[in-house]
Length: 92
Image (cartoon, rainbow, N blue to C red):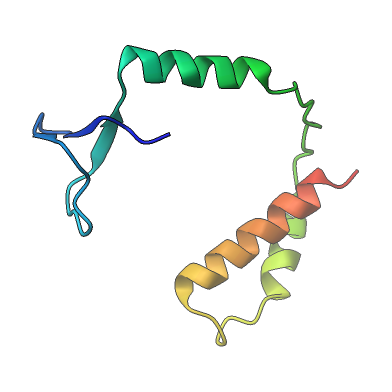
């Protein structure tokens, strides 16, 4: 669903989101759009999420050591390690 307008943290209102905005813009919806979103959320089935276990420092260190630090950018490396930690934490 497309927002009706956007507003910056400073209170500047935009009719459309600029393609390369340096501002953080928050979407604004009309009451009809909000009601449609509410109806959509109510129709979604409830999904039970399994609680994750806490990992020990040793387990986290082991995951980090398994990753190749030099073949990835910093962001890719962090995402990869984060994904591996979440996967390990979700295992029982």
